[in-house]
Length: 346
Image 1 (cartoon, rainbow, N blue to C red):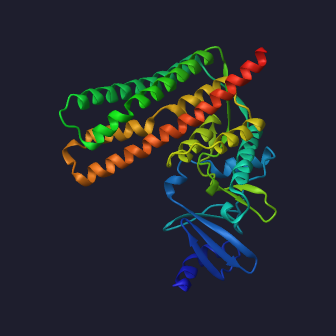
Image 2: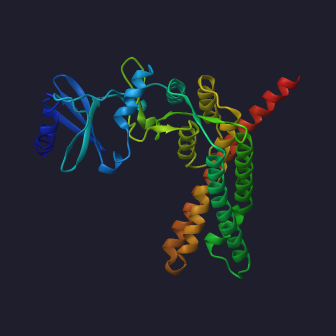
Image 3: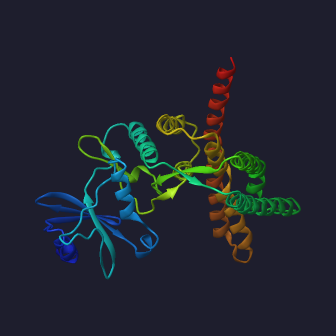
């Protein structure tokens, strides 16, 4: 079996003048053992590269003096990405995962510090027009308002029934907290919109696009490096932070300070402007996944059975945990801002 795998990848590795001795598969990454040490051969689906400026972005990072990313090796003829009938590939050094090293919280501190450095080194100003700003605000606030109307109508329909389904009963229990989250997010979005009307530019940087500890690995000297930058793009740095935390909070209920500590580490190197923080809070607080789950349940009315009901209730509980976890994190940010304001005034 291993000889078949080795034969399968031998033509690709030959382009790098590598002779594989042993291969181990880790999802879409193949660990290649050679007499020159281990390498990582990553496989990409074609659509992962369709709109990607992956290699150009790595070049930008290098030109800006940011070196905390895993290099991509080129072949004998200078190619960085190879392809065959099954997909696209690139080769990089093999790095360890954080589970094999030290304290977990220290690893997250290092990752956020490095992410802040990446944003800082690639930061630039981009002009914005009033039309662009209004279009974004109208599109987002309009969609949020439609979704708000949907969940309000659903609560009315649920409360009008003699007997609610388990999902409907659960939904009614969570409803008021969801509405508070919606109102808070809408308020922050409005504050951001009003503040940005006075601006002529906005800050953008090269963002990772898929920040997680699985994409931040270490060498033997404990230096951290980002990998999997295929989704990188120039955008607001807020996007990296929001995407990371929405994934991090998508778990059982947690009320720990470490998440806020990571954000503090990031802010020491790359502090957000007031407007960026307003936008971050709006994106974070908006109960997007909860609303989608409710809308999915409404649209499935003709295909509900006991199994579907059980799964729907379980999923609703999970997205409610996301709201609660996010609410705790947001409250920590607001408390810190309040205390800072009090200190300035005294």
